[in-house]
Amino acid sequence: MLRDATIVDADAVAMLVLHELERRQLRRLRRVTKEQLSQMLFVGYHQPEFRYGYPQARVYQNQGVAVGVVYGYPAAVEATLDNQWAELFSRQQLTVPQQLVVTPRALQNEWYLDLLTVRNRSKSKTYQQKWFDEWLLGDAIHRARESGQPVMGMDVRPGSSLGTLAAEFGFVATQRRLLDRQVYYHLRLKLR
Image 1 (cartoon, rainbow, N blue to C red):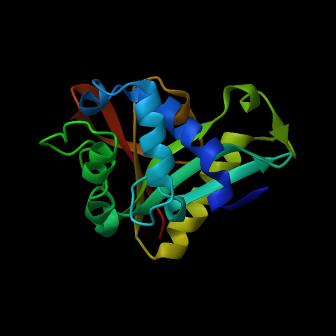
Image 2 (cartoon, rainbow, N blue to C red):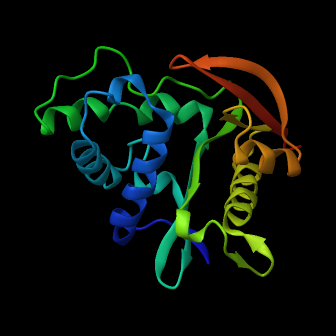
């Protein structure tokens, strides 16, 4: 079942985001232990204007547990979502990074899909002949259309399963980008 994330999903969603951020290997988070990052994400999840806070999330629930999460928002609000990292670092008594933890990625006038991930145990499971990540991406496209933005965008690593899935939905690579010293392709889908 697809639904908006709630406060109750904090543990499950924070762990899903933690694993995805570890996979992305963001430079600003390298000096942070897994426990510290987990705590920051848990606390940040409860803050409405945090990039990985519950208002930006939709979850796929299976048997009462959030097994997948998708984060997305219009490009215009991305700058307001990163202001919470400094407070989260301070709470952990860590040195606040001088630069943004996550660099702005959304292009003008697009609804940006920041993160889509499914628990490893659930990746091979389907519901009504669709994989959980298919349900999440389809829902994200629906939300993007409702937002009124003309385009939906996302960044994927070359050869990633999300990139392959996005191509099946009609996304097209528009540029090659270097984000946090790693190569990504910016994919876009026209919504109108």
